[in-house]
Length: 399
Ligand SMILES: [Zn+2]
Image (tube, rainbow, N blue to C red; front, side, top):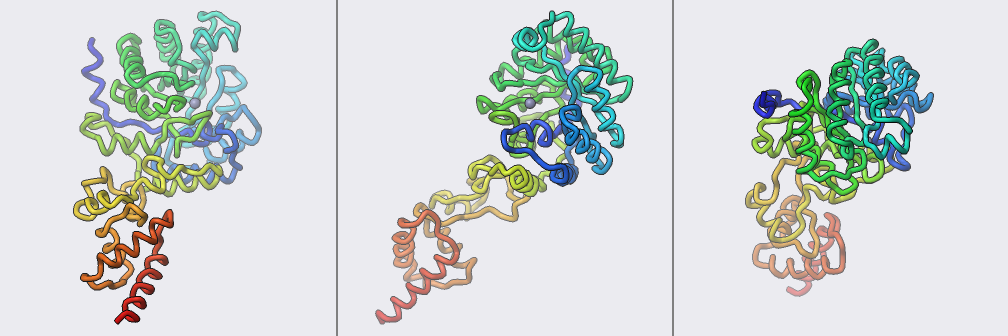
């Protein structure tokens, strides 16, 4: 059977947020219990499908935090991460079982590099452990996700065998992580496609992708995963995470939204208007600032400063904007004034501030503005008011 035909029937892409687990593993980003709960409530408002609340066996604090989120946050599935060992799985089940929809997410590394360095075991032994531990998890929870850690560097044929075995053992989602951010979009897309073509029971599980950003390709790799049949994307707010971070949820979701036709109707169920508030909250609580030019949620993502862009934008927003700021939770675009701004934006600003400069002296005022702007990085509203005042008084004394 050609699986490439039936794959596009299911168009919903589940969003698996791991801000509280992988995101919190960012150096210096650790969060307190009440802060994690606050973020989890906000993620529910954003309408993510799954919240990975933590790694319960890693510390008593994380256990309590996952348990609290499972008990108190309604809406999304609540997942806990665990290694493929009985103690880890027990602890994770204890932490998530209070959720209305709990998930156990267990993982084991499948690449030869990891198997040799971390486990000193054979591939067959790893295969057996994976299947046994998924079966154990499935005996407790009907929603089990399995991750083949370092899948991006795992031997293809071994990966197919592991996935087939864990799906037989009860895994309902199989996650393909590019743990070290090594793959290239086309290559990663082909990996997902080949999994669909070569794992005989793959239609019994959802394929998930989990991409890291070491080469700046986490979002692109995730989207290529979707193009090739993945229907769950693991990601974080602001792209925080180990090392260079994870795929940024806001980028993946807005790419699917803005380019819906290109992605053949694949969509998320996110309330994207909550992105800005969520981004700000995660940034404040983790202490990790968002770079101004960050896609979607950066301070400058909807700001136009150059004169040509400002003029075009004022004539028709579509000239320089591919999405509405309201779609991500901003009230409007901004036209910050600076040395490269033009007359059109300056006039728009004067109107916004209810300041009047007679039409015939606008060129003269524009020159005064330019001289001022050349000295400054930004020209704010107070500066404009002061410029108008000085300009007026200079003119009246000249009369
Ligand atoms: Zn990761």
